[in-house]
Image (cartoon, rainbow, N blue to C red; front, side, top):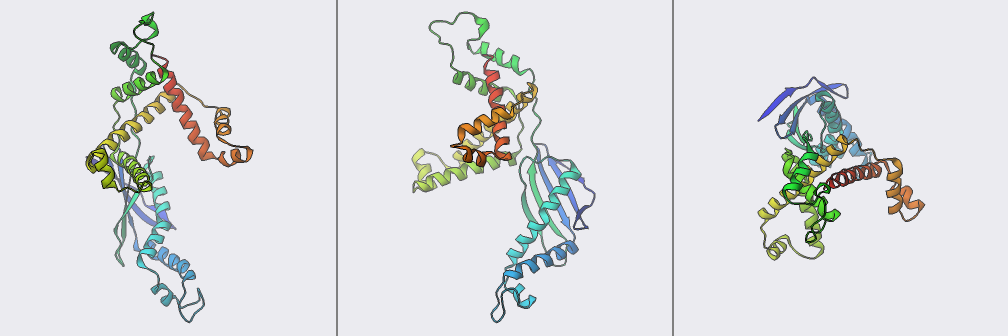
Length: 304
């Protein structure tokens, strides 16, 4: 079930474009843009002017041929692709600001209508992250541990026949409890993106081994459908766990220091030059996010 809202006109090169947004209950968002043909024509002229600079026409120097002759040598798909590269960033930014949405993934775009002399229509599909309701997660963890017979400090002496669980065993139990107890409604588009990433990675690995997908599936006794189902379950659990641990970190007010991030970078770097190469804002954000979730998991494991 979806609901649609209409945006005010968004500016594209001082001209207008209308966007309509539809949100599904699972967080999937579709934005349909209607772009006036006047905007399309203006941008297309700019694109063609740029593209013809690199076109060679017999009898003329590169970039000096009559425009009509040069344009005739440019594939239509190339013009449309370049035109969309010019239009989409501005359209998307305006829609995000207008509707106050926070896309969790970069949208997939679909050209719905692109007829000469008529307004164009483009659909963007993305999603927002779900709200996570943890409830009394600490109580849930300690309660589950008692039910399953896991040793906790309040149980007193450890049974000689039952060894105290290792850190890894505690973490695995925490992960299982969190995934089972916290209901996370993930957008299908988010799961599909992760599944496709995993499938692409698998294909890359088996191709390096000189195998085909069919041959690999036969060797492991799986079908393409069962493999995708398996990856969907893995993707859902992995994304859910990431979101849950991020929420736990917020609840526990986790703050990773710059020194901690530097320490990880220096451990990974071979020398000072390598450190400078690795020390990028994007890499620091990635390390901070990883350390934050690591802290949250360690904190929860200490409850067992």
